[in-house]
Structures are given as structure tokens and as C-alpha cells.
Image (cartoon, rainbow, N blue to C red; front, side, top):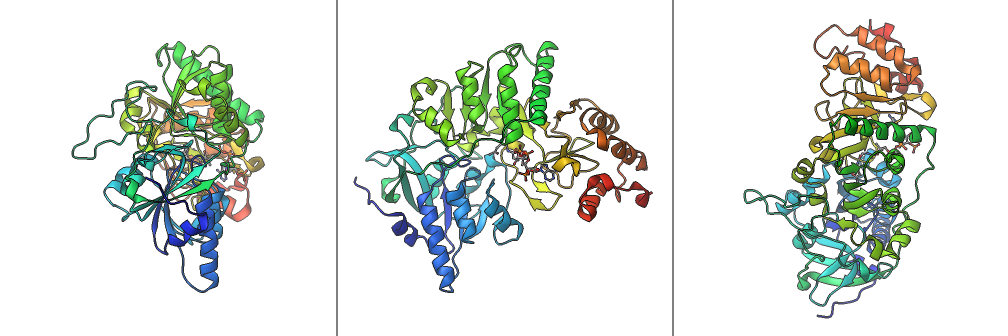
Amino acid sequence: MAFPILSAQEAAELIKNGDNIGLSGFTASGSPKVITEALAAKAVKEHEAGRPFKVSVFTGASTNNHADGALARANAIARRTPYQNTPDLRLRINSHDCHYFDLHLSELAQKFRYNTYGELDWAILEVAKVFENGEVVLGTGVGNVPTYAAKAKKIFLELNTKLPEGLYGLHDIYMPLDPPHRREIPIYTPSDRIGHPTVKIDPSKIAGIIHSDAYDGIKGFTALDDTTLQIGANVCNFLIGEVRAQRIPQEFLPIQSGVGNVANAVLFGLGDAKELPPFAMYTEVIQDAVIDLMRMGRCKFGSTCSLTLSDAKEAEVLDDLDFFRDKIVIRPAEISNSPEVIRRLGVIAMNTALEADIFGNINSTHVVGTRMMNGIGGSGDFTRNGYLSIFSCPSITKGGLISNIVPMCSHIDHTEHSVDVIITEQGVADIRGLDPVQRAERIIDNCAHPMYKELLRDYLKLGKGGQTPHHLAASLGFHTAFQNTGDMRLTDWSQYA
Ligand code: 0RQ
């Protein structure tokens, strides 16, 4: 069947104000690029003509500057979920121009199959190859494509000529049955393949193929500094100790690692931690550092939802796919992040906190409890279900104006029940088996920055008892001081005494 070839503008013209759109990809990888930019340009024209134009955008995780970035700048996003991380969209979300709701990444596909958020008018999917029967080979990120392709009324395919057809075989496309008919997802080791290398699309739904040759535009990470290097070393030393103590099996367990600079530093540390055996990853994102670990033989296999690589690293991988073919599988988000599989495999979950409180709760998403940063992403899927759940972050931010260890988190994404270990450049607080006061003492002693230790100890003395001895009025004292003075060090407990 010959599918119509459209320009990005022709495709955008078919999308109407109020439509629901599902995008391919997971992080910037595999997200569409040219139709979303044309859609943003259309929105600008519509707004200039005095007409409303906004669409609801559903994705796998964050996207890229061509999608979230362009659409947010055009104020063209009515509703958005799940994870995002472009500065322009962050501004729209925090000013309520865009109605964003934050969700565990593993949950979105199922919710769409039950029409929780309404019907999907369009799916826009970046692909590496289209077969005549409508089957497609995806790019470097899968996200929720199988579900969006099945549910969308109409589909645009962005055929990216930069993506080699050799990507065929890297994906493992599998859609689980839904409740009440659900059965186990039969993954017993990270490298198990249970699905199909392509996504099968009903050819009658393909509204057009649009050519593209754009890169994902992912920047390299901030250079490692003393703080992030020390965090990475602390994580690795902790894991080595756990293997020695036989709390982790000698053959080790699969690793999940989050996104960002801190996660990158942790992965870097694993390259040097030769006492740990070569390991597999069961994760949602493979970053640059993992590719280097594969070259070094330290990471032997990576199950992921995306290859979130800088443009240079992506070119390196795409040019050498034969080396990576038996080392990588790219899965849909509901499989890469499946609570069932994560629990079965015994994944070691390593994610980054914006702030941790002295009782072991974690804020991953809200700056000073109010401004959305990125979203919970997959951190909850992995933390809640992991064999061992670790959070790391620097002990201070902005030169010490902010302590990342606080009396009470200003927003909580991960509760004390799911968090096993907190690690900063100062040290490691293993809080398993401790009561709240014991946890607080260990986190302050081992993780807080010296400039904040006394303030935190004094807070603990303010409480009037109870198992978790908060002083409720003072519990957000660090954040209040920051809002009033710009410096958490100026917290004055005497006003609460
Ligand atoms: O701001 O860029 O202005 O300097 O937050 O902080 O230290 O560079 O950390 O890049 O590792 O990101 C939690 C956001 C950390 C990320 C978060 C400021 C700090 C800096 C970034 P600047 P760093 P990272 C897998 C799992 C949730 C989702 C998740 C994240 C910026 O890891 O989004 O884990 N996680 N998904 O200065 C105010 C604080 C702060 C603060 C840091 N307490 N208050 N600002 N910053 N702490 C992936 C997916 O799910 C797809």
C-alpha cells in the first residue's frame, strides 16, 4: 500500500484545536520533530488571527525542543502528561498556561487503553522504516507507541532518514493484557525478548508519511566535578560493601539509573568499581555513560525504553550497531518500568532527589514545594518496586543557599517506606531498619553538609515527641527562610520555640 507523502505543514493543517495527540519517544529520543514544529507555527498564526488553538499532548516521558519546546513557546499545549523537562514548557506549567498532571510512566499506556483521558485523535510517530503492510521500525525511544498506535484514530509517521534501517531488531514490542485478564509479563532476565521487532499499524489509519532528518538535539552532560564524582564513589563503595556483606548476591543484580548529572556521575563511578562484577541494566534510559561502560565490558546488557544519547554518542552507536545488537533491547515504557518485572528481577534503583528530609522522604519534582521541575518520571516505578532503592543528591545547592537535606520535604514523591539509602558527597545513610529518630540522626550525621548539621540537630530538639517528632509549625522553616531571605542558613528556630 502506498501511503501519502505530506509536508509537515500539510500534516499540521489536519490537526484541529482541542485534539488529543500521542507522541512517540521517551525523553528526547524518538520524539517527533518536524510536525510538532509545524504545529507550533500553525498555533502562532491561529493566535494572531484571534482564534484559540491548543492541543493535549501525551508522550512517553520528556520530549525535545522540537516538540515540547516549540509547542510551549507557541502556547499550544492545553494538557500534558507525563514527564517533561524543557524550560519553556516548565514556565507554561508553572503559570497554568498548560494543565500538566504528573504520573508514573508505567501507568499511562493502560490508562489510554481504557480511555481515561478521552480518545486519541492523532499519533505522531518517529520511525526508521515503514513496511508496505504498515509495520514500522521505531527510532531510539519507544515510550507508549504500541498503545498510541492502537488507539489513535489517525497516524502520521515521521520517517527520519538519519535513523538507519539497521535499528530493526533492537526493539522488543509487547503489549500486556489488561485487567481483569492480565497475565504475567514473561521477562525473567533483562535480556529476555518477549515481543516483536516492529510495531504493527493498521495501514488504513496512516494519514501520511512526513520526511525528517533532524537529530534529537541532546546535549552532553555537565562535566563531572568534585561533588558529583564523590557521590558516584560513595554509591559504588556502598554497593561493594553490600556485595561483601552478601546482602546483594555475588553475581550482582540489574541496575536502574535515573537521568541527569548526578545519575551520570554514578554511572561513571561504576566503570571504576572493578570489585563489582560486570552488570546488566534493567532501566528506562541509557545515557552516554552506559555506552562507555558497554565498550569497557563493565555493562554487559541494557534493557531500556530509550537510548538518550548526546548527538555525538548517538552517531557513534548508530554507526556501530553490530557491536550493540546483542547488548541492548528497547522496550515500551509499561514494560521497561513494569512494577512486576522490576520486583521479579530485583532491580537496584538509583535515582536523584531535589531534596531529602531527615526522616527519609524524597522530593524529586517540586522546587520549594511549589514550582514543577520535571516530574516523577519513572523514579516511582523503580523506587517502590526495587530490591534496593537509593537516592542521591548533593548535600547543598547554589553554593549553600539551599540545603538538600531538610527537616521536612516541601513536596513528597517517594515516602520513607520506599527509600532504603540516601547518599550525598558527604556520605551514605543506610536507613533500613531504623525508626524515624534513628533515621534522622543518621541522615544528619552522614549526609547533611557541615554548615547545616547543627540547624538540623536543633530542629530535632524542637519537636514535642511522637514517633516522628516533627514541630509542625517549624517543619518548613528552611523553605520559609529561603523564601524570605534567599538563604536557608538564616533559619531561626527561636521564632518557633
Ligand atoms: O539547577 O540547572 O539552575 O543549576 O536543580 O540539579 O544537581 O544538576 O541534578 O541534573 O541530576 O537533576 C531531580 C531534577 C535532578 C532529576 C532532578 C537545582 C540545581 C539545578 C538540577 P540549575 P542537578 P540533576 C529516570 C528517573 C525526577 C525524575 C526521575 C529529575 C537543577 O533527576 O528530574 O528521577 N528527577 N526519573 O541547582 C532548588 C533544590 C534543588 C534545586 C537541585 N533542593 N531546590 N533547586 N536544584 N536541588 C528518568 C525518567 O523518568 C525519564
